[in-house]
Length: 612
Image (cartoon, rainbow, N blue to C red; front, side):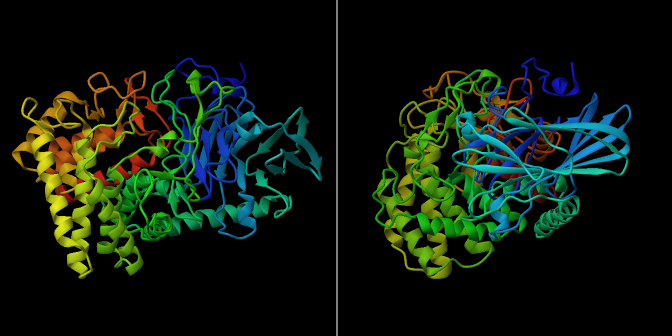
């Protein structure tokens, strides 16, 4: 077995697929790529996060396409980020030397060069001498579009009906059918460069000499370090918090300020199951929570950009199916995200279907209004007073919530088993109104305060009356039933209930006894509350970090710190998390996931504060 073949053998026994955790992320604030620990790019969409994949072997090792770059001899590999940046380095230690691949995407703004979306792979031999090899095998449009390959002045031009890419290299490129290969040897101190650029009518093909790649490397490192320098966090878990912040920044689409939930689609929540979704869109809830996390650390530019995104997409007449806002949008703000399946792709480790688009866009999820208005409130409190135009939008949102809070919806977990009266949805409607009232009182802004207060207090009384189970001695998932749900962990964080209220402490104990498994927290029990989908759920990492905050606020600091430290052990080798953790500690779901990283930041910040 060759080194490349060995690298592509999953330890779990699935040929062609590494564990989800065995990947690193690079990006340019327009799109991103996943690089596995063997040096292969297995996921890359160009020119945007939500564009069809060019390399998609993580969803089909045979048909998806990939960009392999590794030693030609057996080697041990290690992967890390260049300190305080999103420049990824994969190191190869072989019998005759040590080499590394530096992967990064330059951040060049809205210039013409920015339209290239250049992906640079710089190969270096740092000790001894090593043979390397590369294979570039694009499969455009999720492997559905053919392409024409031509060589011109040493460059390879891949041209499909929808996208054209140029590959240049300091190594000699050779054509192998639809693909391009290279084999070369480097001695200590020597370097080779591969650069993949988009080209078209607006951008002409061009090469990337070694000297230019060095300049691009230096400027990319400088960009990320300059951005991270704005962080105010100096606590105990600085490295993990800053990696989470850098990851959230990579999930930002710079042209609009939208923040995607993840850069991937259809990585399964259960291997072989159907819980596979496209997360390359802007969820209002996820983005609002991201704004909270980044503001906490001192990053304000992203909050301003998202406020702009919000202002452009509030429907003033509020006549949409979900009110003035949809639950999610395309990264460019589009509202139509039709869901379809790609049956020609087998899915990660055979986990079909592979989906693009997301049918949940048409769901009613009332909690988004609370998440959003809480972030607006914190923006107004921590950064700068909101504009009169944004206050007008807030007024529209709160008036709609006052008229529409008392109805069933699909809830925060986007269940497909029918609408219910979810406690979390009511809780966040309460938050929406309460935060708007705070802003109005603090700033002297015009508001229909008597009406808002009536609605706010009615929600509070309804949750206390119908959201509490005397049998379980706990707040529950939905009204008039006895099903637990980890989303109620938000109650003290949202300041709906005191963290030491007897009802809350009893709820915390019930969640710990029924939904917590050695610090890992399940969202709910699908057997007790069917969600319309087959298969099992892993533990949900955002809930695990919420549990840490619940323990922290309840004063159970030893338990909180131990639970937090345990959660850190489930991160991958780079400090990245997917959406869920499986039975044996494996990462599951789309990767990396904004929800998990923003919750880590919040938990670390508040636990640090409590520990002193």
